[in-house]
Image (tube, rainbow, N blue to C red; front, top):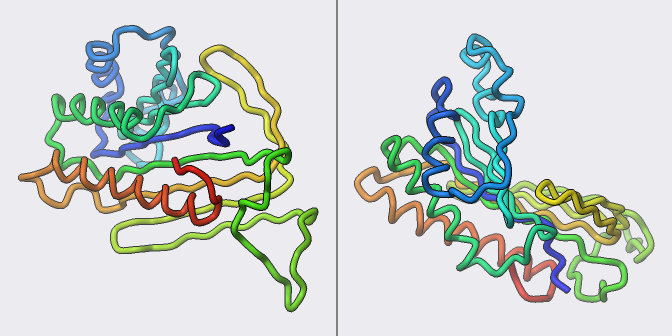
Length: 237
């Protein structure tokens, strides 16, 4: 069984006030089969406050639910959420089509060199009833190795060229996965493995922005996949 719970793509760009509503209109022209559009917290934040604290530009104003994924739309970002409860993750080559469609939407609104960062985040829950022997990590305190039944939580952050690579591993986790589309609930337990890779440099070559975005997006995925395979000796993301 695939341990993937959720795959997330996020792109951040030069924000502007009320841009989320413009993006919503453009998104509806491309993705016309939404199940629901939910007004979110970003609509309640005063523009004066956004001008004072830029982080509020990334608070979603709209959540758009589709049959197999959701979009979060803010004045400065778009997020794709793919929950395993809403449909099987069919591999990178298929999932990648969603970020590429978002890229085309952004291209229709602004120059692509206004993209500031983009990332992939994969959340996996390796269930206790699966073979934990496939997990490839050992932790010691002094000369004493932790036993399999010991609880542990480990976070790492690595800066590699223009990339930020973060991993989060926690054992003996109890997790409730809830589908925002259907409301379906699944209770899981096991070892949590989160891999988050961010390209923090935006677009470097404005004259070749689209090809650069696609090339770097594949690099980001390759880094996620390599880390996953290194830690968990099974098929990658």
